Image (cartoon, rainbow, N blue to C red; front, top):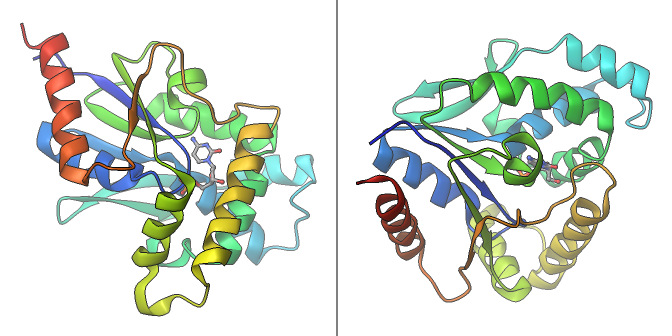
Length: 223
Ligand code: DC
């Protein structure tokens, strides 16, 4: 089969990350978690005195960063200026700040170039919010993964396990706020591409979603 560029978009908690990681492993492709790039920028903003609305400062900051994915024990891991940061970017504060920096066009423009570069050799699964609409409108195959708000909140709540200091209701409220901020921003809002394969995972397991995608890819490209 030819090398494909696959995109997977959708709202928070729909199961995108796990599905993308597994899909990439099954195909022997790279997995690119583009949310981690926004979270990486947010991490640096949080350690600086920069106002996240100050576009000039954000532009300079982005230009000074080296964000990359490295394969560690067969898993794609995000690195910032040579250091692993995966364990630092999932806190509620960074999650909220990532959504704010993701609404700034200067940040999106910078990360757009980086993502295009990362996609040059295809054989990759790109996961995010605007992969099929803005970054790779010519992707070989696009998926849009959704689930009901209640199910997404429940999944996020269960994922956080013992470290969770939020109630399920608070998690649901956070997801609603983030969905609204991601879907209503002017630049590259969260939405499905017209030509994306839409999947509602509310009543599907991760492996059912992955198998469905693989079957779809096979039917389109394995001739
Ligand atoms: O997928 P995530 O929760 O790690 O994403 C973090 C934030 O970045 C979230 O608010 C949405 C935003 N994001 C985006 O705007 N565009 C992308 N391609 C990926 C993530």
